[in-house]
Image (cartoon, rainbow, N blue to C red):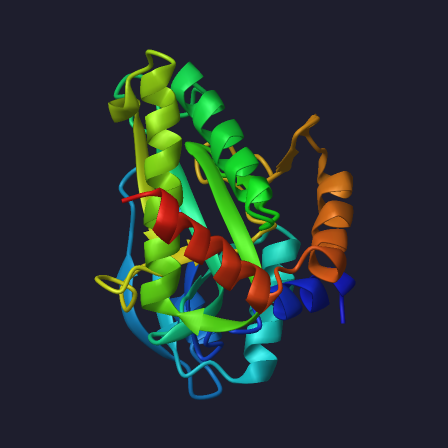
Length: 252
């Protein structure tokens, strides 16, 4: 097995693996005939008029076929997106998007400050983040040693997000330029998926590089950092609980 596939399976161990959303440039009946084998089914397909990527929600995916999809993902033949568990998860993600209407892929000052503030805030709580460039902004992941209820994860992220936006206001920046989404979100977790690390941005085809306090890493260094994060920076359950408890006392 490709070692990158093994890393993805370990990092996203808590995600259901029998369903996924696939983003690919391929389409047509011949493609679906090749894709939908071994009991897999198509819940929906979305063809984009611009021809950037087409999206397919798949269900009933056997383990071997998921391994094939993950291999295609790391080889940049497609993007694989997974869904969070409906009750509890050992990963969480802040999705920071540029809300700018003219050039949404530009890293505006509000985004630059927001991702630095959020990363610093999480590190200050003892929760080391994995920050991944996502084209319109960043995905800021955390990985826990054990699953936590979705309600607690969501509350933790809401409070961290509020602290981040407050920092923008203190600096005189417009918080409305940044759009926060938090995953898992108990309100929509059954319909929203996220791209896995190693994906390519839909529009500019760039690799999802990792951002550190020293700057963006290249593709090779990003995979090395991802492996190190998985091995050495997973957040202990007690550490997360203490971090959340401290926010409950600090942020109303």
